[in-house]
Image (cartoon, rainbow, N blue to C red):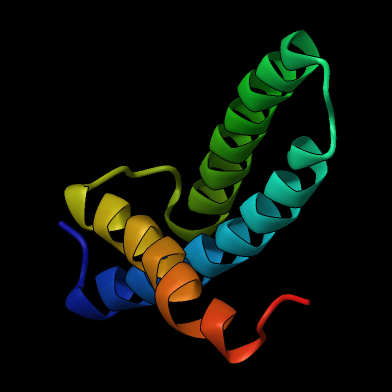
Length: 94
C-alpha cells in the first residue's frame, strides 16, 4: 500500500502534467485549425492521442512505477480543465 505522501506527490505531478498537456493540446488546436485536409487532421488527432497516452504512461512510470489509480485520472483531467478555464484566460489570444 502506498503512503499518503507518495499519493499526494503523484497527484501533484500528474496535475502539472495535465496543465502541460492542456498547453500542448492548445498548440495542436491552432495547428489543426489551419489545415484544410480533413484526413490529415484525423490522422494527427489519433497521433496526438497516442503520444499523450505514451507521455502520461512515461511520467507515471517515473513517478510511481506505473501504478494507475482513479485519482491519477482526476489529477490529469483537473490539470487540463485548470489550464483551459483559468490559465488560458490570463493570456488572451490575438
